[in-house]
Each structure stands twice: as structure tokens, then as C-alpha cells.
Amino acid sequence: MERILVVGVTGAGKSTLAQALSGRLGLPHHEMDALYFNGPDWSVNDELTEDVSRLTAKPGWIIDSIGYPEVRDLLWNRADTVIWLDYPRRVIMPRVLRRSFRRTVTREALFGGNRETWKDWLSREHPAWWAWSQHGTRHREIERRVNDPRFAPLHTLRFAHPDDTAAWLTSL
Image 1 (cartoon, rainbow, N blue to C red):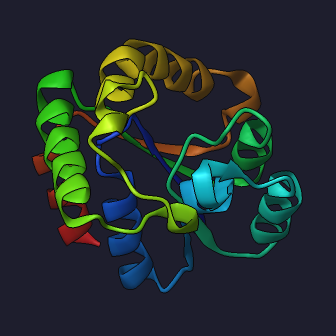
Image 2: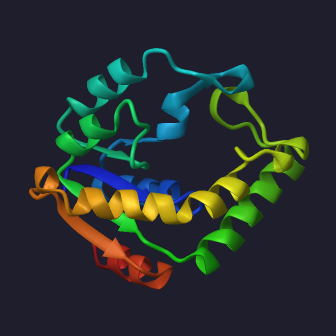
């Protein structure tokens, strides 16, 4: 367990788990959204593939994402472990709503200095809308990848509830 992908739908707790794993295992954690969004107005990193390629060429890392389409196969080919936070909507939605509300109220700076706003809540791109609408799609995509023979060598840990994840993390 040296090149780890923490995957799941928006709001599952991927970044939180990746940070905790980083502390326990002494591996660097890279937040995929911070790599992807690198400037104001949610501008996208034109060098994402090169950046991810450079980071994943190193012997140890943790990345908190299934990966954006342009780097998805690269990540999955270079990982040795996938930790899947396969939580139901009833777990995800309160988490993502609390997080987005907190970020909106506190004006927390996010990737590239961007912030969530009240107006953003009306957008289909808002994390709450995204988590709800993409839950099934993301679940099927991860399941397909986990069962894909190309990725059979990956050690996969699948957790259906945060308590299971917490127990596993404690056992490390």
C-alpha cells in the first residue's frame, strides 16, 4: 500500500481519509481538485496530465479521486491500492450539504482561491447537486473499474459505511 487511490462519490470523505492515511503511512497526499482547478473562476489546469504523471511516477502517494477523465487511466494504472468509500446517498447527502453550507457561510478559500457562493447552490455543478445526480453514475464507474481485468492487480478495499472505514483506519 504505497500508491493509493481513495475513491467514492462527492462528499464521501475521500480527502479526509486521504489526509488521515497520509499521516499514518507517511505518504504525500495530493488533492485531485486542487490539481485540476488552479486559478480564479474555477479555471482548469492545462498541464494536469503532466502534473499527475510527475506525481504518480514517484514511489509513494495518495490521491483522493477516481481521477478526471484525462488522467483516470493513468492513475489506475499506477496505483497499487484502491480504497472505495461506497456509501449510500443517505450518508453522503448530509455530509456534502453540511460541508457546502459551512464553506459558503465562512467563505472558505478552495482550490485556486475559489469559493462556494449562495448563487452556486442553483448550479448543476454545485457539490450538492453533483453528489445527488452523479451518485449512481459514479458508483457504476468505480464498480466497472474494480472489476476490469486491467486493474485486477490492484488491492481493493471497499467500505459500505463510515464506521467500517474508521475501524479499518484504526487498525493500521
